[in-house]
Amino acid sequence: MMDFGERLKKLREERGISQSELARRLETSPRMVLRWEKSEVKPSADHLINISKNLGVSVDEILGLGSPDDPLLHELMALVVHLDDKNRQLILELVRSLANPT
Image (cartoon, rainbow, N blue to C red; front, side, top):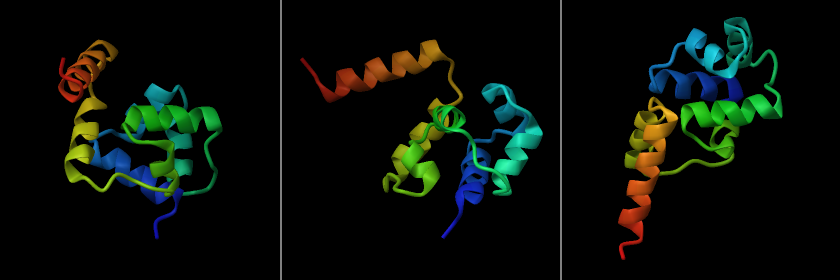
């Protein structure tokens, strides 16, 4: 079973995000991301929430408490994480309209 650091690294790499880029997005240092990935330290609750948002996964998934089994969902999350807020909102509205047709 993977520990937190291994999961973080795997999720980050699957999305093609460098340690430096993730650090920039989280307003922390690349060294801190490296320390998280090596399981030397754990991120704060605020950082954990921001990590999940930036990687497009739930906090539960990062913590190893559960993850979606659908590979298409994983692919969608990996793609959406690279979009800006405006385009993420458009995707959300599109999915809502498809899920709840009127």
